[in-house]
Length: 282
Ligand code: ATR
Image (tube, rainbow, N blue to C red; front, side, top):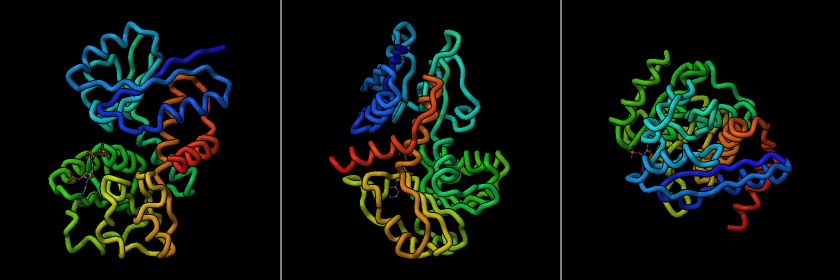
């Protein structure tokens, strides 16, 4: 039987669902798969990567705070990793360590597969300008979104992200969360995305600003999946908008990573049902 040895590096690792998800899917597919968590202090990243080369690990996921720092220890990057400027998946190819980024793919795939929406030609409003937002905004720009409005608490970070999306040929506007244009910008958008940690259980459960601007024909997407129904999604739902929770992006980014490592397709519905059970037991 084929055996895969995988893992995730981050610091701290908190309660990542990736080990559980990959092991559960591999079990269903009859694959022997190990997936370990490695809490790697940023100071020890170089040492870890040196050791990784000589181990039997087939690949790893990379999470906060290593997604950018890890790039200097790799032999190659996929186009997605270059565009996003960060790596969340490392796999081996011809004895080389290759860095990929599957977050943007996971986001776009969740729109296509689970909301039946194609972002090309659409007006999109995105809360956030951090790491997750960078993957989302650059992917949306690459998918020929008509216009993206980035709203962020720290305006300067939104401006920096906008430069990247504009380079990809997209029309981009930036506002701060306090801007008087906030509600109007949301009203004008076809898709509204929360890519901040606002709404996350135990972190920041407040409401997103300006969501009264959501209309019944919008699609509201959250990257937060704990809780699954965030205040943002509950509100959007009450207005009649279509909603998409953060678990789908997690599943589709995982599916792409899994394919890089094993060449096998990932049963996404099955992954969702085991994750839902897991979340409801925690
Ligand atoms: P990740 O890699 O998960 O995206 P991050 O890079 O730390 O994490 O980004 C977090 C995002 O959530 C940022 O856009 C952050 O806003 P700032 O750029 O102003 O820090 C946003 N965010 C987090 N907590 C927030 C809060 N309480 N209010 C508004 N925005 C918040």
